[in-house]
Length: 179
Image 1 (cartoon, rainbow, N blue to C red):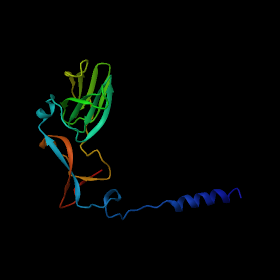
Image 2 (tube, rainbow, N blue to C red):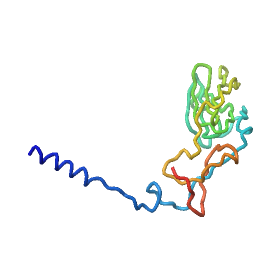
Image 3 (cartoon, one colour):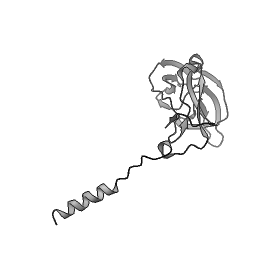
Image 4 (cartoon, helix red, strand yellow):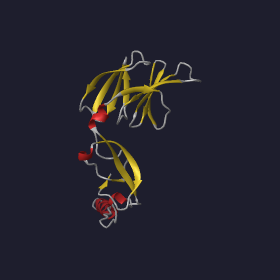
């Protein structure tokens, strides 16, 4: 019995392994004619951070609260500043346009936001008039693939500019890149 049990366990372990080497598609996901294409911008245009008039929320991301204010990330585009003193009637104050912005954090009177590979430090002591105070270059890693997994995508080309977003499009042939 002492030798039989280990032999049975080993046999079960060996036979439970199944190797597929004949999958006709990458990552076990068949190409369905759609994929993601990078949206490029000029590096100088990406570095431009602008305080703008309030805008409607289109694709909100992370939400951060500070005192009575809400800071709502607009995925890949910037940050909405909303006065939430009256939760029944929040007042949309302004929009900070930041290309490639997905993450925000607040500590004290400072708002930290990613700008593709750069980290921005914004003074929000008075959230009605935010000010960009510092840009820390190359502080955030940037990936040359969409933020989704299990998708086909057109490989990014640094010669075309910096990738600020990804759009889902129809594709005639299967792209080389998959994640």
